[in-house]
Image (cartoon, rainbow, N blue to C red; front, side, top):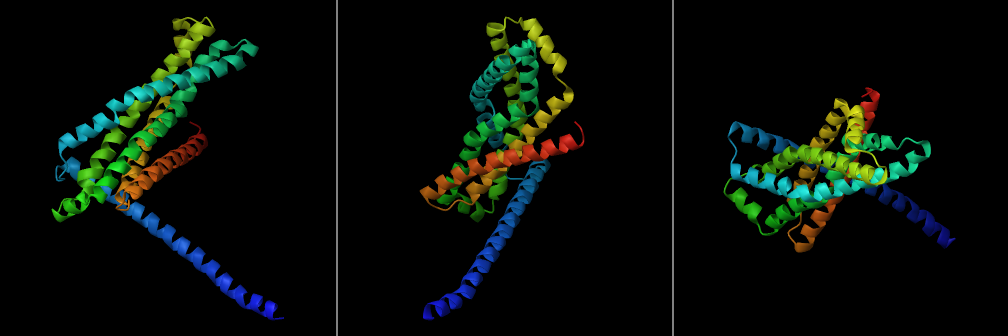
Length: 279
């Protein structure tokens, strides 16, 4: 009897704890969403000030970030894209040769890479390369109290640190996506020449017959949006990093994971929208 009474006395308290946890979790989620939206608004305001010439951002900082996020990323993006094109061509050749339609490997590589896969692979690469770098750099500055020093000098950290990085990645991501598409098509062409005995001219004509401006525009749009997602996510986690070495590491890891998830979510939304409007 005493055991049953104690059990029934503790049950309302456990229910109260569950409701408190759910309520705290909901409040934390709303608070995080509000902070993210506020950060995004600050970034757009900073970019507006840059174009109006009222920001404290130096022009050289933007060019340095474009070089780091764009030019220096070309080799790794080209290498991965070439291998992806080779893999798609090999898999397509194994399946299509049973139907005598091996030439359509060119269409398979071109459509899959240019519409979605090229931008997706570039986004994943840049999430691990540039997104983590942004989070680690800004997180280290926060640990070394450099951001506090900027605020003391009445310099906005968003204008001075975040806006150039966001602009650089949104400018370079569509270009990197186009490079990834072209290199992947070249990789598929190499497989077609070596395995299927298809000439370069025949492969190129088949590729151009199956390509369309809509697919090209959709792929570039994916890359442009991925640039926003990766840059904002990396800078957001860097600005929110705790002032410890482990905090910087956690910020970089979370930035990579959140960037990749964000790119996948954006891809899912755009795919549904484009299928709905029949593009």
